[in-house]
Length: 237
Image 1 (cartoon, rainbow, N blue to C red):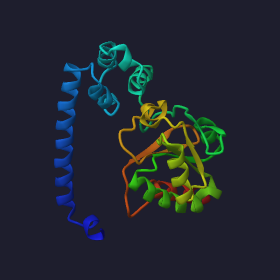
Image 2 (cartoon, rainbow, N blue to C red):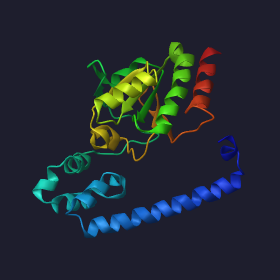
Image 3 (cartoon, rainbow, N blue to C red):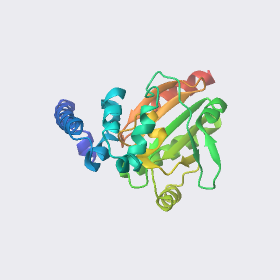
């Protein structure tokens, strides 16, 4: 694996560019199919992964074209919820609050946690996501290093199965804030934050501002490690 990640940078950039082109082409074809054939479960199930590619007007047209039984599915309800979201949160924005329950049944609010800590990492993950599980190990070390200095991590599980979430949490020794609504990608939280793939993390300061975002997994370094080192070094001077 080390050889893979140490490969020639130009070659990696070329491969990444080609992959992105293919993905964009696939997305375009799927979007066209959905617009032309909205009233079926296949199209409906794909909309959830591409909500940020449609305008609110287009989503409304898709939703209104659905039979009532499709509107009442989880995916149909998810589209309805998404249409009520004012803005997808991204770097530079103020956070939107989200709430979830811990494994012990305690309700936690992201806004409250952010207000009480110097820096907060919001991490979207799931038990069946291998890179997420590896990243949890990185976060464990990051948490140990900076928790006394004012860092808190909020892991928001996109699992729908409580047993899977609980088992993964125990295996990964997640000792920080660990919440979920058990709605998977159909919940309001991943929609609000524009989550299309996991792991996906956000670094938030005490003023509720998202100062950085990280998608994917880097085997060589935890997300936001450089930013946190710089921030806490400045505070200690």
